[in-house]
Length: 223
Image 1 (tube, rainbow, N blue to C red):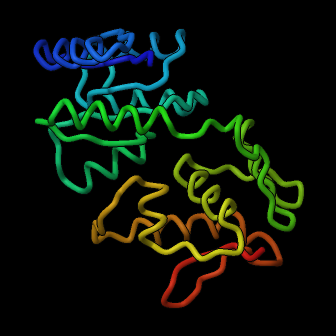
Image 2 (spheres, rainbow, N blue to C red):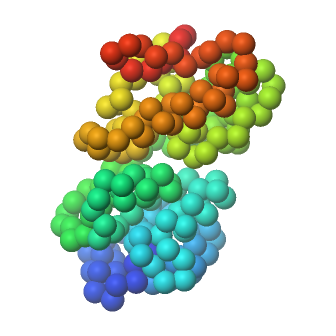
């Protein structure tokens, strides 16, 4: 794999880069957020490792800028902040995975391998539909009845998951795992809040509601 590591710690950065190179990977190590952003946008990588606290440009804004520029390279965020709110904030910014310091190198390596193995959009359907709702994954465009709908990155991911599982109920736990990458209950209403926002954008302005609440189970878009 070709991996970009953006880490300013003089011990952690070289440690990660050395370990990954020993495994046969090609690694670029950058110690500044702004330089990391330039590197990530001018070269192709299989996966990114980004520290949350960086000089020049912090990891959260680095990721937000990348995602805003439609850069979808899988990214793992490293941080010393272990709170649930911090983890959700990182995932909301566009991180695909989140690892708290200190960490075992073996776990870091395994997580990066898993991220790189995620299917590419080119191997999947690129346009998802439900009645008059259309989602173009390649163009990152959502429209209903011809009207373009502006979605935030996490709203887009949530709608994509509902459309991919059209006709099947998605539980709160399933959505936390697939959309937020959280495999435990954070005791927050993040799913419910995003479903409400999504409904405001794709249901309320139109005559027919597409997102259904299945009482006691979860949510779905009917087939």
